[in-house]
Image 1 (cartoon, rainbow, N blue to C red):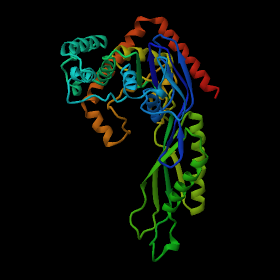
Image 2: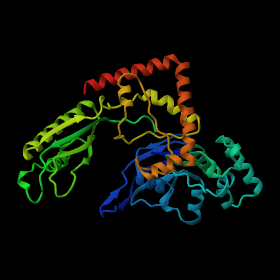
Image 3: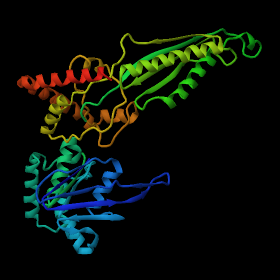
Image 4: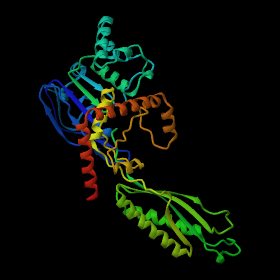
Length: 412
């Protein structure tokens, strides 16, 4: 999401920009128009990734559109060159998603950089740095190094730096609430055959590994016709004992995931038929069974509950963008959410995204930011609970919203 906060009338009239993708195809920034009067307002462009960056570059005249117009404070950007363009850029502040702070410098020096580039006096710089630090409530961090700050504090330093030159326009790239985790059925698949010497007496064997390989192949083909929210993944846990022995016993473990329990169970029954077919083709005996007594059900988000946590997190100095990415993970909190309202929010533990179940994730958890997130999360949850305790009407509204969400799911 890109936010444009402005104090002077500005407009964007259908700018378009062509760029080459890695696969050789052309991508185009979506066309849009925005025009606002002279007042401070937030404007939200729901673009993603490189499109956000390209939009901000267009507004800041770091890129030139192939067509359309960009007008800032009544000035069309297309005709500006040299000093005129430089003067306009000085009127535009920018807050970056990854902060772009100098780790080896203090908070003071990071904020002072644009003022130093303008050749301000030491007295002016000190005064302005103190003003913006007070505005973002970080006066006590003036002499701290960036590495000593939390993620929310770094974001506020980025905002303070962007405000240091008193810009007329502030461009903000986005700095997670409950994500809709999906249902999950952990299962075990087993085949029983008959062992035999693979070279001397292959005709006497019944190959349980053949049955398991047929199962994997059939599941791979079935994936082509599955809905977007369905995931199936598995491993072979027992494939045989020796290359010269036809396997008489093989096993595998799978997870079946889907947006709803109903859809997950539909896939479960299709996999039962795949196992039956593989057993029939090879002469083995097949078995598919759940490995847990209870399945992990899909989570039911309650946005009004999320909103309370969102407000609390922002009061603690964190910037929380809407979560546009649907999670395809699963958790038993989904079972709880079928009965009562829940939140399962996420807090960043690194400045860059890291994949789950990875060594990078382990390192992020052990990092300074990862450890700081524990205290932040605990404080945010406690304050969220306190707000609900002190506001029974809000709690009743959240419960009503949850009941409606449960009823809506049952009608799917």
